Length: 337
Image (cartoon, rainbow, N blue to C red; front, top):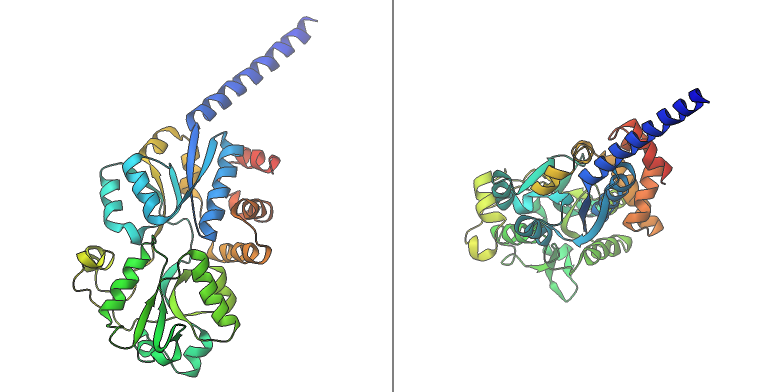
């Protein structure tokens, strides 16, 4: 009886210690707010983070709807949300540098997705048929990309308002004197509008010219051709002090190729201070571009939202995400799926 009581006491003590450490771990993580940007890959990443942080680390996670500029501004000025899983750093280069130097924000993960790229794309059959090799070649042929409301003008489809790339496109548009050469700058209105513009044109066999990025469903689905700007990168100084700025702050933009795409996972200093081992997960996860493309195709085909796609990813791609966490955390996450 004494031995049984002793064993029971030992087991109870072990459980209590285990629970106390779990509680400490959970308390250290606490409440976390994660920005869910309004494009598919960012939505997927936000929801994967939510599931892993909740089920694996015991965090209490809130998803906050966001977009590049508003989310960055809120994190920088208000300290919330805590995490931006997919922040395209080129769009906020200077203020991000200032925020990190002053320790308000931290680049927790400099490469959360591999194989990235932004730029100007055209339909592949158009490039081949008309021997379009550079952006200058395309600009010389506005007749191939007629604007829906004015067929005498070419249509260049830019980014929706609120995206940092809208400013870059507008300045490169001016640098290449595209208006004088017969073009009109098109605001697609939203992420869905941009996607619809590209997808509808290519589905109909029509020509399309505009901004996009990779890895994405549509670029992979349609094998879009990323155009060579035909000029070297203008340099970080002019890019950061002019190209990424509003027109009133960039009076004389110069021609340039697109800067190397940089996507970061950014967190607040408060999250870094309190997240504990959960920060190790955020800092160490990286989605291979090929896997991300597959997930984006899945989301498009199944009309899946970020939450459903996150469960699909966790169930089908354990070989990827289980490397990001400890065996114990992976076990907890899988048990909660």
